[in-house]
Image 1: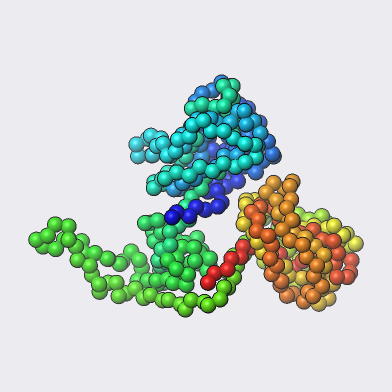
Image 2: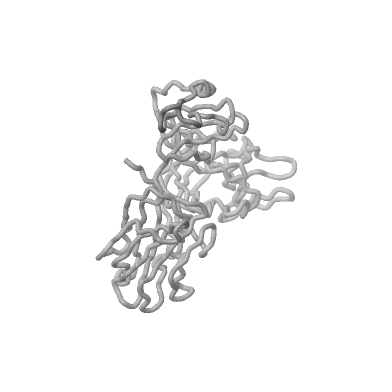
Amino acid sequence: MVVIKDVSAIPIMTSNTAPFGVVSASSEFSTSYQAWIVFGQTAKNAYWSSKYKESPSWLSYEFPQAKRIIRYSILMESGVAYAPLNWTFEGYDEASGAWIVLDTRTQVSFVINVKQLYDFNNENFYKKYRINISKGSNTEYTYISKMEMFEPLPEKGVVLQDPTTNQQYSLSDRTLIHLPDSTNESIVEYGIEQGKFIQLDVPFTKHRYFNDTPVAGTVGVFTHDVGVIKTLSIKEFAKNKIFEPIFTWYETKMISDVLPSPLKATASSFYVSTAPYTYFPFRAFDGNISDISTTNTSCWATDRDAFVDSWLMLDFGELRKVNTVQLTPRNETWITQAAKEFKIESSTDGAVWNVVGNFDITDWQPLTSKKLDLSLSEGRYFRITHKSNNGGQYISWTEVKYGYKREVN
């Protein structure tokens, strides 16, 4: 059974070409109804609209690299009367220069604010996909509010490591792929089983699995050189008998409130002391838990007596799946500035917020991090809002990290 990723392969678009990929359409009614809006975190009831009485009409997205898409979704936040009625979902074959029909839908009805999913069989990789609408529910215009495209999760495959470069690869989906990183989570996701991998004693490209010529007197029979295979050493680790969490932390390492892009750190206030001590919001996301130095401070703090209902927010610039946070207070001199009552919220648009955790903590230790569980959410913005602290005139954090935790056996 194919398992499908639960996050769209298309990033949160801010224009027809940013942050990457290309959005295009047969037409756009006006600049208020551009094609990229369908793939962006825009205001509610924003949508793409074709020109007046255009039929057929289409909307496409082109990835930088070819992808295998096997599901798409359509959401109508308004304008159901102008929704697509009949369409095909297609992939563009560059070799033939033709659009290949992957899915066909007719007489589809929509319900406002209900995301509808459409699965189909597709074994091929295409850079460009489109919805080609042959008929809309209304003859004047065609609307789409939101649309997503989804890939399958990689099939479990052997993880290979090149000892020369320490790069890791996986034989997944019948393709050798370079793993995005060497974290435990990547090994679990791309590996044949948890905790198993194969390390190459020589670079992968130098291994031969079959001889190049067939056996004499046969047709299509090749011998296998076992002597080469012995250069592979298989390492297998004992399977844990209990569930253990694997944490994936979203490293920020910010150097200003807006760098590195697309990260942005903001706060209800921040304290400005005598130079060089300025407690900017990004200091809580700079990856540094050394509380103070001779040149600057590495924490964020509210302005004096401004800690009630104060907040600290991080904008990732894209959706992140989060269910845990790690908070580090200041040293013993300022440990009373650690928050007592506070909540953590997430948002996809910076306007509508969902509470993912409420806390009341009095046992903070200096420069000692706490990992706190949150309700699983997928958001772009994450905010800590404080009600009280453990004494003093400020609230401060030396470091804040958001992440995703899962338990594996």
